[in-house]
Length: 181
Ligand SMILES: [Zn+2]
Image (cartoon, rainbow, N blue to C red; front, side, top):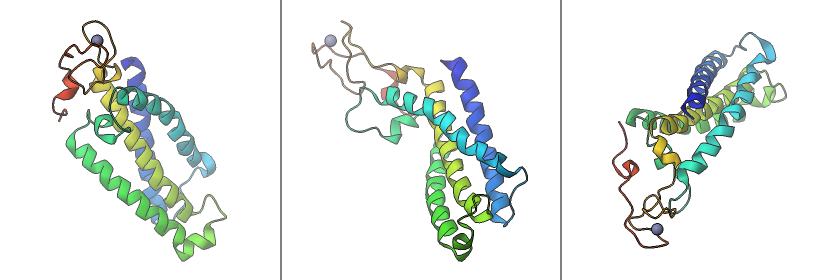
């Protein structure tokens, strides 16, 4: 699994950096060179998110309630989680200001216009960074991909103290300890 995670981490890091570059260039009102090659970043998001969704389901299994970002990002440093939160807020503000502005209306028909690229690249940055976070958690906390099992082999809830099938006490898993910093 780790052999697959490393290249995926690299692709999401490179995707993020390229998206950030496109974003900065588009903010200055310029279309980056390379024409439609920029949309490879759009395709890259899906390449990364296919395994990310698979890992997110594995990490979230055996937990009560809905999938939440807490466990999915528990392998990331605290500053990275803060950075994602800021990026999340920024991507939405950016998207609306890029497409609601006068320039946005004029250019909306053109996919390669700076305003359109500005709107899309903000989301590309967010998706690459969030994907990187989930991949990093899977890489640094591989035990989170396995569900907790009781001494008799029943599958239990990872955050439960007792097996829901036979009532045996579940061993303490490292996932119950505080997040890695
Ligand atoms: Zn059991």
